[in-house]
Image (cartoon, rainbow, N blue to C red; front, side, top):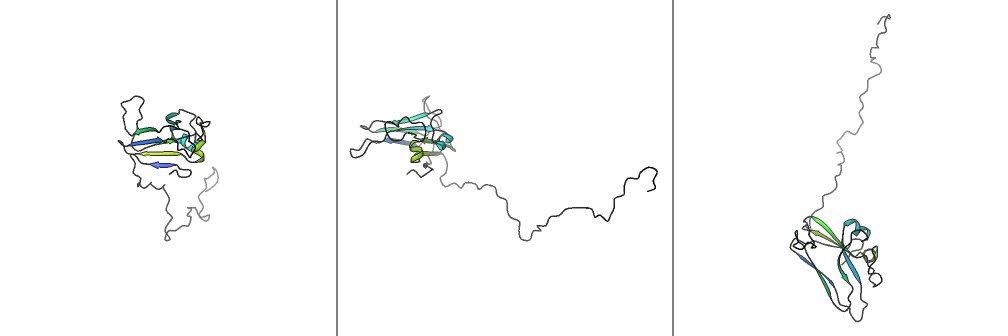
Amino acid sequence: RFMSGKGLVIYPEIGDKLDIICPKAEPSRPYEYYKLYLVRKDQADACSTVMDPNVLVTCNRPEQEIRFTIKFQEFSPNYMGLEFKRQQDYFITSTSNGTLDGLENREGGVCQTRSMKIVMKVGQDPNAVIPEQLTTSRPSKESDNTVKIVTQSPRSKVPAVEEPGKPG
């Protein structure tokens, strides 16, 4: 299920496969048209596929099921094949709006309206604790919080430089 503002987060391992299925239209419901892209994080965050689009699959055939399989592999034998690295995040989104007319939309769409984004955290532990940001600790109650400034008392005069001809 896509979570509002976040999408869906999955944790595939190298060697896993992910099937993306565009279901056949049901007679009682209107077909939804989508074009799915593999994008960079900034594109997923902005719901924009304008720059360097990498189309994965187009769901535009209501009369048949369309299946696209992603194999999480570090090296692909196919020069056009997808390659993934462990400990990296990859993003899939759609900027289509679900209608045939909106299939080619390059901004907004269901990425924005339904948070239709998938974050694939390859080779990462879903239970890993994210390190806290560095915080400064408060001083203990025993600490002396007074400001200490080293000054010279006005009573102890520093001898002035003697002027020539005047006794010191």
